[in-house]
Image (cartoon, helix red, strand yellow):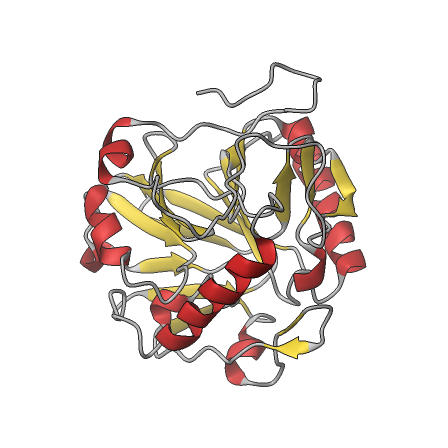
Length: 299
């Protein structure tokens, strides 16, 4: 999405979703010693660091403050050589657009071979129950196309790509070192657990729910319980919470229930995302706020 289109989306989506507790991004900061996060309005991008290598997960909006916020975390854009793309929506690949600041022009991007059809124009991305076509994304970055289950190694960082179609036709999630699962727009965390992501933005909601159930099943069968990190609603290490409502979809046309007292009124308001907090406060995980456990967030 061009810089102009990103700004237009900021205005329109702020008006549509404010007060509904839909978008609950993490602020800029660190989850732990491996995972750093940057907030771009309602979207989060992530960096995973190990063995002196940092890889990036998603590339956010075409966003003017990305270099600044990377500086808060002491991450030099020039060191990023590998970017994992969950899907090509305009709030996940904006920093790769040809009219962006081109901070990562020398990085290779990794995405599913199915998702690449949006970038080639073979398929057009549709939202609002497939009634509205989004602008095409244009990038000159080198692309590496992935298959379901493909495993990559970046200087000892193991990355497994898992196809989870529904939100987009070729959406992928990434399991890193069997301990961190970056889910993009596969999961949405409500106050009472995880749901399939926003109904109006999916190519196929039924397919998205089936993909979510299959993902849970695969992780269980492999005995894995990773930290689960979403693109718009934070993270959790509570496996049961994350998949509690896997057969339901977040309804974006109403205010969410149960109420989440920590949800921002307007996710596009970044006034509480500061350099001071980024350097001093670990990013809290989402826990159950529905009365099953202690209410609130915890470290």
